[in-house]
Amino acid sequence: MDTPISINASIDDEEDIMPLLLDDSSAESGDSSISTISNNKDLGGILGEKTISQWASFIFIVNQIYGPGVLSISIGFQQSGWVLTMVSLTLFLIVSCLASTLLCEAVSLIPGNRQFDKHIEYSGAVRYYFGKRYYFIFQILNNLCLQAYNIASIVICAQSLDQFFIFIFGKTFALQMHPSFRFVECLDADELYSTGVVCISLGYLIICAMSIPTSIMNLNDNVKIVQTISFIFLFVLIGEFIVQYFMNGLVVDRVPAFGKSYYQLVSIFVFSWAFPMFIVSWCNEKTNEVSVNRAVWYSGLFSWFGYLVIGLLGAMAYQSLGSDNILNLMGQLSSPAVTRVASFLFSLGVIMPGIPICLITTRYNLTHICGKQASYFWGVIAPWLVAFVFCQKEVFADLLNWSSLILNSLVNFIIPFVLYLKATDPNQSPSNAYDPRQPSTVQPYPKRLEKHSRLLTWIILISVIVVSLIQIIYDIIETTQGKNPLN
Image 1 (cartoon, rainbow, N blue to C red):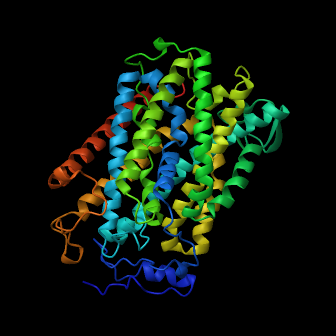
Image 2 (image 1 turned 90 degrees about the vertical axis):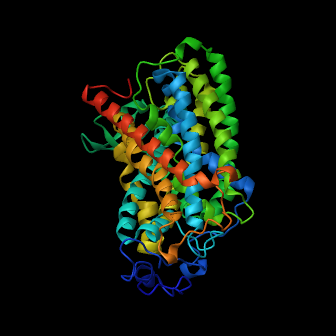
Image 3 (image 1 turned 120 degrees about the horizontal axis):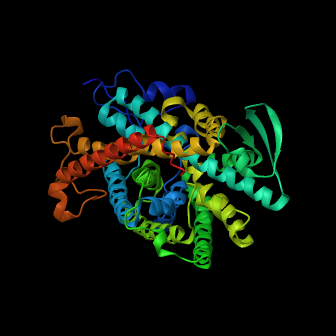
């Protein structure tokens, strides 16, 4: 085997990062010589410290689950019926929590990283187990996935903020890029986001200005301040929404047992439960006393119940959900003023704080490949230069659907299982050997099932692949027949 790179190597300046971490001595099919940064000072404090507590971990994971996907749950109940929607919801609760814990277990099995002291990110684990070639492929997939998720949050927040300006001032403004280049004054936010119109709205610019400063923070600092405030907003605003649902009047017949359309049945929940891609960054900055299993499963079960209540009540409260974003309905003129304000605040207080998490995670994964300054640009600034293109309603719906089915499925629900299977492969080379006699750091499966862990992982992995392929084929057929996901 080629001479390994020392994991304690010191980095004196930014130019040394790239050659140290991507040395040509790496093996092609597996990189047991992966270098990690054991001292955060080597990167000028660009990575966070291990200070996230158990309660803060619960807050962080719940906030990531209640991302932009939560706004599409009600339409899923109406279109697909409560039976299959609840089955899909429960399936992805189990799969996402297992994917998260198995991914953390695989990362902890890298030598010297039992307590996540080496700050090895998701992409670093891929490189360790599969080598440099697959590492670069994964970097592309992972960053596309993060940005697709991030763009969805940006679009929802920008639309909601523009509606808020119209509610308060009677109008909003935008720089229209297409079909003509001009400044526009708009009295209806829907005009800015209709098909064929590409613009940078006032709401978009303000969301950008508010998100970039919190994206420069490290994850542990963001959790301590931004995510805690967001969690309070989440509780208060969901309470107001539930009251409004009851005031609208709940009609049980609006939610059939089986619906007429299963378009997006899987993609909605793939998008909603897409938190495994953030979990390794959290693991690296949680305290050693925090239990990965408790944090992930308690947060998941709590969110499952919330999704069920919000989804069912929202579907019963509105006759026809013609938009993937229920906030658009709640922000309309026909809604009470307090509900309209709450819908605007939900975007700013709950959805928007998820934007910096995407950008921080992107920055962390890029730090070891392109250095400090470049990771800040590509991870924090560059996404804003393209996100406005996806603000059109149908483009947004397609982004939500296809990025979920392809990118999110791969990054969040397939690759974590593959990494675990690789990490626990008894045929690994001696330097990567997995010793089942060693106590598990995470223990993703109950002790009585540990001896069947690989078989169970294979069964779940194959099931996820089959379900995703069925949904992709179904959606392709629906799309070729001219079906619109918004109708």
